Length: 377
Image 1 (cartoon, helix red, strand yellow):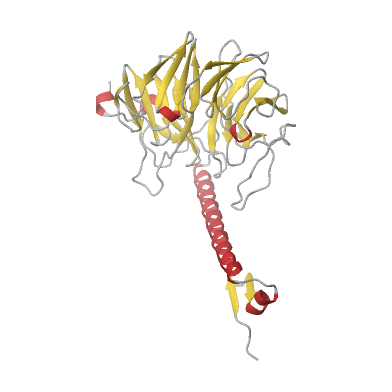
Image 2 (cartoon, helix red, strand yellow):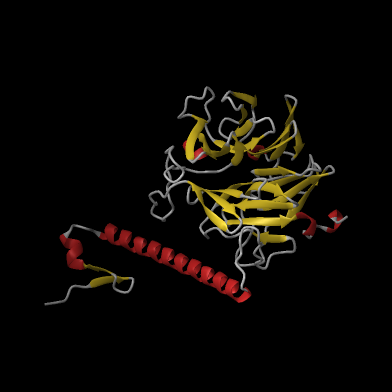
């Protein structure tokens, strides 16, 4: 008798005989599907091994220097002068938004794990968001569940800003804004809530000194202001996919992603302060400069504006009537960076940059950056 031919995948861990396939009525399509699954598993295994190797290398470097990096320490990885990484979070982290409190604690939204991280000195832990069922690529799918921190579920935590006695988190995947405070996660507003203003795709968040929360709705092209009492009103409309927000005094700065512009709203009126509206990466005079779907914005005490120019993979500066690229995408290494800068936060002369797709939080020491010659004082 002729022995049945076998298909062996992964060194014998998966064996399919021809007789078995015929016996269970599986045809050629199932065999192809099995081969595709095998390739997917191989990719996952390769990624896991690479991550373990990175962790081992990092641990070895720490042991050699007899130091234990924490959030207050910047880990240099062949980066340009003035650029470092804030990296104690898992390698799978996909940071979108960041807020640093007055006491130095950092809060980071993670679109991969669907969680919010809290980083205090040497301690980093998940503040809110439970483990959820993974998809076929082992990425948590998240969910929508208001509960205690460790039980609550997010679909896509994105922006973060202080509000009431906690932090507001935009969750565009669930069309809502969540509030984490006093150990619980609640819903502030959205299509699944009773708030009179329906939120379709909340993205950027910012708060002012009087306790108001501002949020951008990318889908409806509006900016909403929510009071501490829960009253909501639309203050800006007609925008094209607004995202990142920043409040400076009585001015609200808006990254208008869909129109490649930066908007300032003040005293009830809006004006374009940078960007011609065309997509590009041209520096120069503010209204002739170009951006490509900017999603993050921050304003320094001296009025200097920093923009996360997301599609260009760059950080831009608006100062004295000009737009300047202060960090462009580095392509001279195997791993290009930054890839897609999003959330920004300024603290003590440093600009923190969330890059969702390179899975890093970059830290730019502004007075140490190597700037273009025409911008060196």
